[in-house]
Image 1: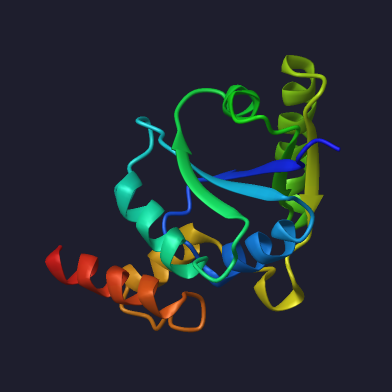
Image 2 (image 1 turned 90 degrees about the horizontal axis):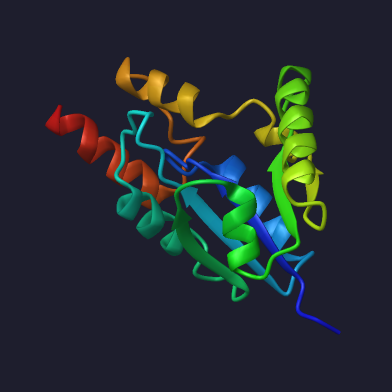
Length: 162
């Protein structure tokens, strides 16, 4: 039986407990789960790609079948180049549905042999988004309930330099 490889793509800027929940649950479904940090030059990220990869490596070090990588370009091309036949996406709210449906359909058209697996976050993480966490932190709010300690430490350090 061929190895089951999945790709969980995202910006992970910064990685949250919600991302970690998705990674843990998706890792149970695959022999190898590649957490792929999107390098998007059009987006202004708080953390560099390498910083996001380092944080993800740290928070997933206890999950042996997780590999951290990055990519530019099409997610389906990255998946193909890494032998993956499934993409993992999260669906937090009904507002995410239309975008995720459109992306899944487009990816399926581009690569019919690559399925999209949609996972619902655990209830306690349904509302967490990196964008919201950054906004709260930038305004001086406490985001410790949303971020693994290593990520929180890096976020505080990043904000103290600005």
